[in-house]
Image (cartoon, rainbow, N blue to C red; front, side, top):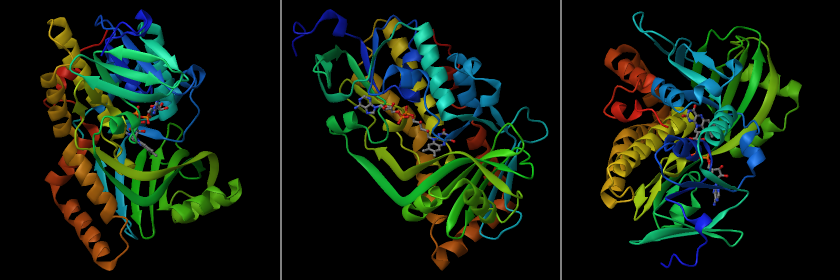
Length: 413
Ligand SMILES: Cc1cc2nc3c(=O)[nH]c(=O)nc-3n(C[C@H](O)[C@H](O)[C@H](O)COP(=O)(O)OP(=O)(O)OC[C@H]3O[C@@H](n4cnc5c(N)ncnc54)[C@H](O)[C@@H]3O)c2cc1C
Protein backbone atom coordinates (compact mmCIF):
# COMPACT_ATOMS: atom_id res chain seq x y z
CA UNK A 1 0.00 0.00 0.00
CA UNK A 2 1.22 3.51 -0.72
CA UNK A 3 2.25 5.61 2.25
CA UNK A 4 2.41 8.89 0.35
CA UNK A 5 -1.34 9.50 0.55
CA UNK A 6 -1.28 9.68 4.37
CA UNK A 7 -0.53 12.73 6.41
CA UNK A 8 2.50 12.27 8.73
CA UNK A 9 0.35 12.72 11.86
CA UNK A 10 -1.63 9.64 10.79
CA UNK A 11 1.38 7.31 10.71
CA UNK A 12 2.11 5.17 13.77
CA UNK A 13 4.02 2.06 14.77
CA UNK A 14 0.98 0.44 16.39
CA UNK A 15 -2.73 1.30 16.18
CA UNK A 16 -4.82 -0.08 19.05
CA UNK A 17 -8.55 -0.40 18.33
CA UNK A 18 -10.60 0.08 21.51
CA UNK A 19 -9.66 1.97 24.68
CA UNK A 20 -11.34 -0.41 27.11
CA UNK A 21 -9.28 -1.72 30.05
CA UNK A 22 -7.25 -4.07 27.82
CA UNK A 23 -6.42 -1.49 25.12
CA UNK A 24 -5.51 1.16 27.70
CA UNK A 25 -3.27 -1.22 29.66
CA UNK A 26 -1.54 -2.42 26.50
CA UNK A 27 -0.76 1.14 25.39
CA UNK A 28 0.49 1.92 28.90
CA UNK A 29 2.68 -1.22 28.88
CA UNK A 30 4.52 0.18 25.84
CA UNK A 31 5.32 3.52 27.50
CA UNK A 32 8.98 4.35 27.12
CA UNK A 33 9.52 1.80 24.34
CA UNK A 34 9.99 4.53 21.74
CA UNK A 35 7.07 3.19 19.71
CA UNK A 36 4.45 5.62 18.42
CA UNK A 37 1.06 4.36 19.55
CA UNK A 38 -2.43 5.46 18.49
CA UNK A 39 -5.63 4.38 20.26
CA UNK A 40 -8.97 4.63 18.50
CA UNK A 41 -12.08 4.62 20.67
CA UNK A 42 -15.67 5.28 19.68
CA UNK A 43 -16.54 6.78 23.08
CA UNK A 44 -15.72 10.44 23.71
CA UNK A 45 -12.71 11.33 25.87
CA UNK A 46 -14.93 12.57 28.73
CA UNK A 47 -16.57 9.12 28.99
CA UNK A 48 -13.12 7.48 29.16
CA UNK A 49 -11.80 9.90 31.77
CA UNK A 50 -14.88 9.51 33.99
CA UNK A 51 -16.60 6.25 32.99
CA UNK A 52 -20.18 5.59 34.07
CA UNK A 53 -20.71 2.88 36.70
CA UNK A 54 -21.53 -0.39 34.95
CA UNK A 55 -22.23 -2.55 38.02
CA UNK A 56 -19.30 -4.94 37.33
CA UNK A 57 -17.07 -5.74 40.29
CA UNK A 58 -13.90 -7.26 38.87
CA UNK A 59 -12.30 -10.02 40.97
CA UNK A 60 -8.54 -9.65 40.54
CA UNK A 61 -5.88 -12.30 41.12
CA UNK A 62 -2.52 -11.64 42.76
CA UNK A 63 -0.83 -11.63 39.35
CA UNK A 64 -3.28 -8.99 38.12
CA UNK A 65 -2.78 -6.86 41.20
CA UNK A 66 0.99 -6.94 40.65
CA UNK A 67 0.57 -6.06 36.98
CA UNK A 68 -1.71 -3.16 37.86
CA UNK A 69 0.88 -1.97 40.37
CA UNK A 70 3.64 -2.19 37.75
CA UNK A 71 1.50 -0.21 35.31
CA UNK A 72 0.82 2.52 37.89
CA UNK A 73 -2.93 1.80 38.02
CA UNK A 74 -3.16 0.42 41.53
CA UNK A 75 -2.02 3.62 43.24
CA UNK A 76 -4.61 5.56 41.23
CA UNK A 77 -7.48 3.60 42.84
CA UNK A 78 -9.24 5.17 45.81
CA UNK A 79 -9.24 3.13 49.07
CA UNK A 80 -13.00 2.70 48.69
CA UNK A 81 -12.52 1.12 45.26
CA UNK A 82 -10.63 -1.89 46.62
CA UNK A 83 -12.29 -4.69 48.60
CA UNK A 84 -10.51 -7.76 49.93
CA UNK A 85 -11.77 -11.22 49.09
CA UNK A 86 -10.90 -13.52 51.99
CA UNK A 87 -13.05 -16.62 51.45
CA UNK A 88 -15.04 -18.15 48.64
CA UNK A 89 -18.01 -20.45 49.07
CA UNK A 90 -19.56 -22.61 46.33
CA UNK A 91 -23.08 -23.91 46.98
CA UNK A 92 -25.30 -26.23 44.95
CA UNK A 93 -29.08 -26.25 45.25
CA UNK A 94 -30.30 -26.45 48.87
CA UNK A 95 -26.84 -27.45 50.17
CA UNK A 96 -26.16 -25.58 53.44
CA UNK A 97 -22.37 -25.96 53.81
CA UNK A 98 -20.96 -26.01 50.28
CA UNK A 99 -17.34 -26.07 49.21
CA UNK A 100 -15.16 -23.44 50.87
CA UNK A 101 -11.91 -21.95 49.58
CA UNK A 102 -9.65 -19.96 51.86
CA UNK A 103 -5.93 -19.14 52.09
CA UNK A 104 -3.90 -21.49 54.28
CA UNK A 105 -2.66 -20.21 57.65
CA UNK A 106 0.91 -19.81 56.27
CA UNK A 107 -0.19 -17.78 53.24
CA UNK A 108 -0.16 -14.02 53.38
CA UNK A 109 -2.90 -11.72 52.10
CA UNK A 110 -6.39 -12.24 50.79
CA UNK A 111 -7.60 -14.62 48.06
CA UNK A 112 -7.90 -11.67 45.72
CA UNK A 113 -9.45 -8.20 45.41
CA UNK A 114 -12.63 -6.73 43.99
CA UNK A 115 -12.44 -3.44 42.10
CA UNK A 116 -15.32 -1.82 40.14
CA UNK A 117 -14.77 -1.97 36.39
CA UNK A 118 -15.36 1.77 35.97
CA UNK A 119 -12.63 2.48 38.57
CA UNK A 120 -10.16 0.30 36.60
CA UNK A 121 -11.08 2.12 33.40
CA UNK A 122 -10.70 5.52 35.04
CA UNK A 123 -7.31 4.63 36.54
CA UNK A 124 -6.05 3.17 33.25
CA UNK A 125 -7.12 6.24 31.26
CA UNK A 126 -5.62 8.70 33.76
CA UNK A 127 -2.34 6.77 33.87
CA UNK A 128 -2.12 6.55 30.08
CA UNK A 129 -2.78 10.24 29.51
CA UNK A 130 -0.41 11.32 32.29
CA UNK A 131 2.55 9.11 31.46
CA UNK A 132 2.61 8.35 27.74
CA UNK A 133 2.52 10.26 24.49
CA UNK A 134 0.08 7.79 22.91
CA UNK A 135 -2.36 9.63 20.64
CA UNK A 136 -6.02 9.09 21.45
CA UNK A 137 -8.51 9.31 18.57
CA UNK A 138 -11.70 9.45 20.63
CA UNK A 139 -15.32 9.64 19.52
CA UNK A 140 -14.35 7.76 16.35
CA UNK A 141 -15.31 4.27 15.19
CA UNK A 142 -13.04 1.99 13.22
CA UNK A 143 -14.92 1.00 10.08
CA UNK A 144 -12.29 -1.11 8.35
CA UNK A 145 -8.83 -2.63 8.66
CA UNK A 146 -6.42 -4.04 6.11
CA UNK A 147 -2.99 -5.57 6.41
CA UNK A 148 -0.42 -6.99 3.99
CA UNK A 149 3.29 -7.77 4.01
CA UNK A 150 4.17 -4.05 3.70
CA UNK A 151 1.99 -2.54 6.43
CA UNK A 152 -1.43 -2.07 7.98
CA UNK A 153 -4.16 0.54 7.75
CA UNK A 154 -7.17 1.43 9.85
CA UNK A 155 -10.11 3.42 8.47
CA UNK A 156 -12.13 5.69 10.74
CA UNK A 157 -15.73 6.79 10.37
CA UNK A 158 -14.69 10.42 9.79
CA UNK A 159 -12.98 9.29 6.58
CA UNK A 160 -9.40 9.40 7.96
CA UNK A 161 -6.98 6.49 7.57
CA UNK A 162 -4.22 5.61 10.03
CA UNK A 163 -1.24 3.55 8.91
CA UNK A 164 0.95 1.39 11.12
CA UNK A 165 3.22 -1.63 11.23
CA UNK A 166 0.81 -3.51 13.50
CA UNK A 167 -2.88 -3.35 14.45
CA UNK A 168 -3.92 -4.55 17.90
CA UNK A 169 -7.65 -5.18 18.35
CA UNK A 170 -9.04 -4.62 21.85
CA UNK A 171 -12.57 -3.93 20.69
CA UNK A 172 -14.59 -6.40 22.83
CA UNK A 173 -15.63 -10.04 22.43
CA UNK A 174 -17.73 -9.08 19.41
CA UNK A 175 -14.65 -7.47 17.79
CA UNK A 176 -15.55 -6.00 14.41
CA UNK A 177 -11.88 -5.78 13.42
CA UNK A 178 -11.30 -9.48 14.18
CA UNK A 179 -14.28 -10.21 11.94
CA UNK A 180 -12.99 -7.83 9.24
CA UNK A 181 -9.68 -9.76 9.28
CA UNK A 182 -11.66 -12.95 8.55
CA UNK A 183 -10.80 -14.72 11.81
CA UNK A 184 -13.55 -17.19 12.73
CA UNK A 185 -14.58 -17.55 16.38
CA UNK A 186 -16.52 -20.14 18.35
CA UNK A 187 -19.35 -18.42 20.20
CA UNK A 188 -21.65 -19.95 22.74
CA UNK A 189 -24.76 -18.04 23.72
CA UNK A 190 -25.88 -19.43 27.07
CA UNK A 191 -29.36 -18.01 26.52
CA UNK A 192 -29.18 -16.36 29.94
CA UNK A 193 -28.65 -12.84 31.17
CA UNK A 194 -26.61 -11.76 34.18
CA UNK A 195 -27.94 -8.99 36.38
CA UNK A 196 -25.49 -7.15 38.65
CA UNK A 197 -26.47 -4.75 41.40
CA UNK A 198 -25.11 -3.43 44.70
CA UNK A 199 -27.24 -4.25 47.76
CA UNK A 200 -27.08 -3.47 51.46
CA UNK A 201 -27.75 -6.41 53.80
CA UNK A 202 -28.55 -6.85 57.47
CA UNK A 203 -25.87 -9.46 58.31
CA UNK A 204 -22.15 -9.04 57.65
CA UNK A 205 -20.67 -10.76 54.62
CA UNK A 206 -17.39 -11.71 56.38
CA UNK A 207 -15.56 -10.88 53.08
CA UNK A 208 -16.78 -14.18 51.65
CA UNK A 209 -17.73 -14.46 47.98
CA UNK A 210 -20.59 -16.82 47.21
CA UNK A 211 -21.24 -18.73 44.02
CA UNK A 212 -24.59 -20.44 44.48
CA UNK A 213 -25.83 -22.76 41.74
CA UNK A 214 -29.39 -22.81 43.00
CA UNK A 215 -32.18 -24.56 41.12
CA UNK A 216 -33.70 -22.21 38.52
CA UNK A 217 -31.16 -19.42 39.19
CA UNK A 218 -27.46 -18.84 39.74
CA UNK A 219 -26.54 -16.35 42.42
CA UNK A 220 -23.26 -14.79 43.39
CA UNK A 221 -22.46 -12.41 46.20
CA UNK A 222 -19.34 -10.27 45.96
CA UNK A 223 -18.39 -8.72 49.32
CA UNK A 224 -17.37 -5.05 49.22
CA UNK A 225 -15.32 -2.99 51.69
CA UNK A 226 -18.30 -2.15 53.90
CA UNK A 227 -19.28 -5.43 55.68
CA UNK A 228 -22.97 -4.76 54.96
CA UNK A 229 -22.51 -3.95 51.27
CA UNK A 230 -22.20 -6.47 48.41
CA UNK A 231 -22.74 -6.82 44.72
CA UNK A 232 -25.30 -9.48 43.86
CA UNK A 233 -25.03 -11.27 40.54
CA UNK A 234 -28.15 -13.06 39.39
CA UNK A 235 -28.27 -15.27 36.29
CA UNK A 236 -31.66 -16.07 34.79
CA UNK A 237 -33.32 -16.53 31.41
CA UNK A 238 -33.50 -13.12 29.73
CA UNK A 239 -37.24 -12.43 30.25
CA UNK A 240 -36.99 -13.18 33.98
CA UNK A 241 -33.95 -10.91 34.33
CA UNK A 242 -35.88 -8.06 32.72
CA UNK A 243 -38.76 -8.61 35.16
CA UNK A 244 -36.37 -8.37 38.15
CA UNK A 245 -34.71 -5.27 36.68
CA UNK A 246 -38.13 -3.61 36.39
CA UNK A 247 -38.91 -4.01 40.13
CA UNK A 248 -38.96 -0.86 42.25
CA UNK A 249 -36.24 -0.49 44.90
CA UNK A 250 -38.30 -1.92 47.76
CA UNK A 251 -39.55 -4.93 45.80
CA UNK A 252 -36.02 -5.54 44.47
CA UNK A 253 -34.56 -5.72 48.00
CA UNK A 254 -37.30 -8.11 49.14
CA UNK A 255 -36.83 -10.28 46.04
CA UNK A 256 -33.05 -10.55 46.65
CA UNK A 257 -33.50 -11.44 50.34
CA UNK A 258 -35.92 -14.20 49.27
CA UNK A 259 -33.56 -15.48 46.58
CA UNK A 260 -30.75 -15.68 49.18
CA UNK A 261 -33.13 -17.59 51.51
CA UNK A 262 -32.71 -14.81 54.07
CA UNK A 263 -29.13 -15.96 54.80
CA UNK A 264 -27.89 -12.36 54.96
CA UNK A 265 -31.08 -10.99 56.52
CA UNK A 266 -33.04 -8.13 54.94
CA UNK A 267 -31.61 -6.59 51.78
CA UNK A 268 -32.07 -3.18 50.19
CA UNK A 269 -31.32 -1.83 46.73
CA UNK A 270 -28.24 0.39 46.28
CA UNK A 271 -27.74 0.09 42.51
CA UNK A 272 -27.02 0.59 39.71
CA UNK A 273 -28.67 -2.48 38.23
CA UNK A 274 -27.09 -3.58 34.92
CA UNK A 275 -27.78 -6.57 32.67
CA UNK A 276 -25.29 -8.54 30.52
CA UNK A 277 -26.24 -11.29 28.02
CA UNK A 278 -23.96 -14.31 28.51
CA UNK A 279 -21.92 -15.25 25.45
CA UNK A 280 -18.55 -17.03 25.56
CA UNK A 281 -16.22 -16.37 22.59
CA UNK A 282 -12.94 -18.02 21.62
CA UNK A 283 -11.47 -17.16 18.19
CA UNK A 284 -9.65 -19.77 16.12
CA UNK A 285 -6.60 -17.50 16.04
CA UNK A 286 -5.50 -14.55 18.16
CA UNK A 287 -3.28 -13.20 15.38
CA UNK A 288 -3.03 -12.72 11.62
CA UNK A 289 -0.56 -10.90 9.38
CA UNK A 290 0.42 -7.68 11.23
CA UNK A 291 -2.66 -8.11 13.43
CA UNK A 292 -3.24 -9.29 17.02
CA UNK A 293 -6.22 -9.46 19.35
CA UNK A 294 -6.05 -8.84 23.11
CA UNK A 295 -8.56 -8.60 25.99
CA UNK A 296 -12.07 -9.89 25.32
CA UNK A 297 -11.38 -9.71 21.57
CA UNK A 298 -8.97 -12.61 22.16
CA UNK A 299 -10.79 -14.48 24.94
CA UNK A 300 -14.41 -13.68 25.80
CA UNK A 301 -14.90 -15.54 29.08
CA UNK A 302 -18.23 -16.35 30.74
CA UNK A 303 -17.99 -14.26 33.95
CA UNK A 304 -18.79 -17.17 36.30
CA UNK A 305 -15.09 -17.91 36.92
CA UNK A 306 -14.21 -14.17 37.03
CA UNK A 307 -11.23 -14.34 34.70
CA UNK A 308 -11.98 -12.14 31.66
CA UNK A 309 -9.98 -9.09 32.70
CA UNK A 310 -7.37 -11.22 34.50
CA UNK A 311 -6.71 -12.92 31.16
CA UNK A 312 -6.89 -9.56 29.37
CA UNK A 313 -4.17 -8.12 31.61
CA UNK A 314 -2.00 -11.19 31.21
CA UNK A 315 -2.36 -11.31 27.43
CA UNK A 316 -1.55 -7.65 26.88
CA UNK A 317 1.50 -8.09 29.11
CA UNK A 318 2.68 -11.10 27.10
CA UNK A 319 2.29 -9.27 23.80
CA UNK A 320 3.68 -5.93 25.00
CA UNK A 321 6.75 -7.61 26.52
CA UNK A 322 7.49 -9.48 23.29
CA UNK A 323 7.08 -6.26 21.29
CA UNK A 324 9.32 -4.24 23.63
CA UNK A 325 12.05 -6.90 23.53
CA UNK A 326 11.94 -7.19 19.73
CA UNK A 327 11.99 -3.43 19.21
CA UNK A 328 14.86 -2.94 21.64
CA UNK A 329 16.83 -5.63 19.79
CA UNK A 330 16.12 -4.03 16.40
CA UNK A 331 13.90 -6.95 15.29
CA UNK A 332 10.51 -6.39 13.61
CA UNK A 333 7.87 -6.27 16.35
CA UNK A 334 5.17 -7.22 13.84
CA UNK A 335 6.81 -10.45 12.61
CA UNK A 336 4.78 -13.63 12.20
CA UNK A 337 7.15 -15.45 14.54
CA UNK A 338 6.57 -12.94 17.35
CA UNK A 339 2.79 -12.93 16.88
CA UNK A 340 2.63 -16.74 16.73
CA UNK A 341 4.67 -16.90 19.95
CA UNK A 342 2.15 -14.62 21.65
CA UNK A 343 -0.72 -16.74 20.37
CA UNK A 344 0.83 -19.97 21.68
CA UNK A 345 1.58 -18.49 25.12
CA UNK A 346 -1.86 -16.92 25.51
CA UNK A 347 -3.69 -20.04 24.32
CA UNK A 348 -1.75 -22.12 26.86
CA UNK A 349 -2.64 -19.64 29.58
CA UNK A 350 -6.36 -19.39 28.75
CA UNK A 351 -7.70 -22.41 26.87
CA UNK A 352 -8.01 -24.90 29.79
CA UNK A 353 -9.93 -22.47 32.01
CA UNK A 354 -12.03 -21.25 29.10
CA UNK A 355 -13.17 -24.83 28.38
CA UNK A 356 -13.67 -25.65 32.07
CA UNK A 357 -15.72 -22.47 32.50
CA UNK A 358 -17.95 -23.37 29.55
CA UNK A 359 -18.47 -26.81 31.10
CA UNK A 360 -19.27 -25.48 34.58
CA UNK A 361 -21.57 -22.76 33.20
CA UNK A 362 -23.43 -25.34 31.12
CA UNK A 363 -23.67 -28.03 33.82
CA UNK A 364 -24.62 -25.78 36.68
CA UNK A 365 -27.41 -24.04 34.83
CA UNK A 366 -28.87 -27.29 33.45
CA UNK A 367 -32.05 -28.13 35.35
CA UNK A 368 -32.47 -31.68 33.96
CA UNK A 369 -32.36 -34.37 36.75
CA UNK A 370 -29.17 -36.12 35.44
CA UNK A 371 -27.30 -32.80 35.43
CA UNK A 372 -28.50 -32.03 38.97
CA UNK A 373 -27.24 -35.41 40.17
CA UNK A 374 -23.92 -34.94 38.39
CA UNK A 375 -23.29 -31.46 39.78
CA UNK A 376 -24.11 -32.57 43.33
CA UNK A 377 -21.74 -35.54 42.95
CA UNK A 378 -19.02 -33.29 41.48
CA UNK A 379 -19.23 -30.87 44.40
CA UNK A 380 -19.13 -33.71 46.96
CA UNK A 381 -16.08 -35.24 45.27
CA UNK A 382 -14.39 -31.83 45.17
CA UNK A 383 -15.09 -31.38 48.91
CA UNK A 384 -13.19 -34.58 49.70
CA UNK A 385 -10.40 -34.21 47.14
CA UNK A 386 -7.78 -31.81 48.52
CA UNK A 387 -5.68 -31.58 45.28
CA UNK A 388 -8.76 -30.27 43.45
CA UNK A 389 -9.26 -27.52 46.03
CA UNK A 390 -5.56 -26.66 45.76
CA UNK A 391 -5.86 -26.41 41.97
CA UNK A 392 -8.89 -24.11 42.16
CA UNK A 393 -7.12 -21.96 44.77
CA UNK A 394 -4.10 -21.63 42.47
CA UNK A 395 -6.44 -20.45 39.70
CA UNK A 396 -8.23 -18.02 42.01
CA UNK A 397 -5.15 -16.38 43.37
CA UNK A 398 -2.88 -16.91 40.31
CA UNK A 399 0.15 -15.54 42.06
CA UNK A 400 2.08 -15.25 38.81
CA UNK A 401 4.79 -17.78 39.59
CA UNK A 402 3.94 -19.62 36.38
CA UNK A 403 6.01 -19.61 33.19
CA UNK A 404 5.09 -16.05 32.27
CA UNK A 405 6.17 -14.43 35.51
CA UNK A 406 9.42 -13.17 34.01
CA UNK A 407 7.37 -11.19 31.51
CA UNK A 408 4.92 -9.98 34.10
CA UNK A 409 7.50 -8.75 36.54
CA UNK A 410 9.07 -6.36 34.06
CA UNK A 411 8.03 -2.81 34.80
CA UNK A 412 6.71 -0.70 31.97
CA UNK A 413 7.90 2.79 31.16
C1 LIG B 1 -20.99 -9.01 34.70
C2 LIG B 1 -19.52 -9.16 34.43
C3 LIG B 1 -18.66 -9.46 35.47
C4 LIG B 1 -17.30 -9.63 35.23
N1 LIG B 1 -16.48 -9.96 36.27
C5 LIG B 1 -15.17 -10.17 36.05
C6 LIG B 1 -14.29 -10.54 37.11
O1 LIG B 1 -14.72 -10.69 38.26
N2 LIG B 1 -12.97 -10.72 36.84
C7 LIG B 1 -12.45 -10.56 35.58
O2 LIG B 1 -11.24 -10.73 35.39
N3 LIG B 1 -13.25 -10.19 34.56
C8 LIG B 1 -14.59 -10.00 34.75
N4 LIG B 1 -15.40 -9.63 33.72
C9 LIG B 1 -14.80 -9.45 32.38
C10 LIG B 1 -14.26 -8.03 32.16
O3 LIG B 1 -15.22 -7.07 32.45
C11 LIG B 1 -13.81 -7.94 30.70
O4 LIG B 1 -12.91 -8.99 30.42
C12 LIG B 1 -13.11 -6.61 30.37
O5 LIG B 1 -13.91 -5.51 30.71
C13 LIG B 1 -12.83 -6.56 28.87
O6 LIG B 1 -12.06 -5.43 28.56
P1 LIG B 1 -11.68 -5.12 27.04
O7 LIG B 1 -10.90 -3.88 27.09
O8 LIG B 1 -11.11 -6.32 26.40
O9 LIG B 1 -13.08 -4.93 26.30
P2 LIG B 1 -14.23 -3.85 26.49
O10 LIG B 1 -14.33 -3.43 27.92
O11 LIG B 1 -15.43 -4.47 25.86
O12 LIG B 1 -13.76 -2.57 25.67
C14 LIG B 1 -13.78 -2.54 24.27
C15 LIG B 1 -13.65 -1.09 23.84
O13 LIG B 1 -13.57 -1.04 22.42
C16 LIG B 1 -14.38 0.02 21.95
N5 LIG B 1 -14.77 -0.33 20.57
C17 LIG B 1 -15.46 -1.41 20.14
N6 LIG B 1 -15.59 -1.42 18.80
C18 LIG B 1 -14.95 -0.30 18.36
C19 LIG B 1 -14.74 0.26 17.06
N7 LIG B 1 -15.19 -0.35 15.95
N8 LIG B 1 -14.07 1.43 16.97
C20 LIG B 1 -13.59 2.05 18.08
N9 LIG B 1 -13.77 1.57 19.32
C21 LIG B 1 -14.43 0.40 19.47
C22 LIG B 1 -15.56 0.04 22.91
O14 LIG B 1 -16.22 1.29 22.91
C23 LIG B 1 -14.87 -0.25 24.23
O15 LIG B 1 -14.43 0.91 24.90
C24 LIG B 1 -16.78 -9.47 33.92
C25 LIG B 1 -17.64 -9.17 32.87
C26 LIG B 1 -19.00 -9.02 33.11
C27 LIG B 1 -19.93 -8.71 31.96
